[in-house]
Amino acid sequence: MSEAAHDHIFGVQISGSGNVVSADRRLRLWGLATAYADSGPVTVGHVCAAANSATVTDGAAIAVALTATPRETIYSSDRTASEIEELSLTLGEGPCVDALAGGLVLVPDLGTAQSSARWPAFAPAAVAAGAQAIFALPLQVGAIRLGVLDLYRTGPGELDHEQGLDALMLADTACALLLDAGSPSSARIPEPASLQHPEVHQATGMISVQLGLSAALALVRLRAYAYVHNRRLRDVSRDVVTRRLRFNPESSSSNGQSEGD
Image (cartoon, rainbow, N blue to C red):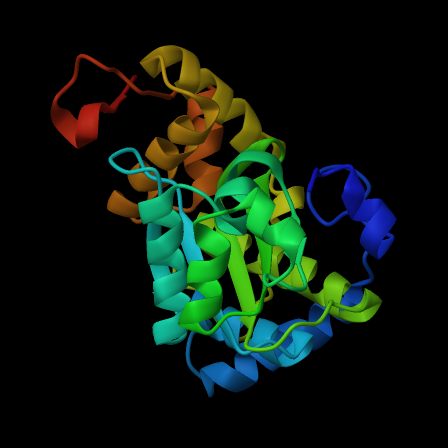
């Protein structure tokens, strides 16, 4: 399903323009994630647990797009979630694949003829693995998709309006945690991924030109630099925009990235 369908389904868009979700919802869902973290740092796994609770789904997984592979699963809640991700990667089809390429995909019943026609190999295999419904939500910053949050149910059923809004909000929260190179704190709600400082977008575009990469891969390189140097993403982005830092494809240091004067 296309991004334009977000408003039609849930009445709101979380990522990109038009973010009208209340702070109360974000605070409530962050509280749910911190409860699963049990006073420790909140991770994407805790956000997935919160998503399962808020949407009454049975499991979750997060896959991210990397340079070496089409995508890599960085978290799965259980064996069924892992099998779903493996099926998507092996068969090259499914809601997870479509969400990474084209946006939100909601499948309340994988056992229908429509699902089988759209994903002839994946749909019956996913049902056999124990998933009757899958909701795939892209993790994105503007037009750049970092990966997908997949939620599944063992029985068929749609997400209602409130569950849909919660799912989109928690996908955005997971994306924000993935973008944050520092250690997340249970006392600090991460800034929405769609509201990251504009320097991140500008720096990504500049690195894309410097290294001849797509915007998505340029953002991966930017995040990797921030992580290796133990710096916040926004600070590194500001250095790129002000030309204090340049990513040099000919340099072998810092994974091909070098600081300018």
